[in-house]
Image (cartoon, helix red, strand yellow):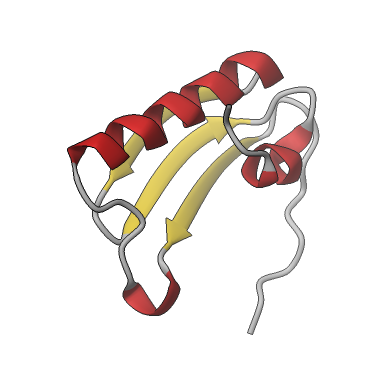
Length: 81
């Protein structure tokens, strides 16, 4: 069952979990990890999102962030360049 919509105004603190489909991998190797973190950081910088902590595992990630001007939903759906 999907979770309900989050309260998201600029400056709201969120704990976000990203999971692979059917417990599959979201990163395969160290170069994937570096690319994941590069994109996450680039998007945070350009959107004004503050990342306070993260844990990146093979099949999931936890991110503690404060949403910026574009909001959490757009941040999570944007692709890094």
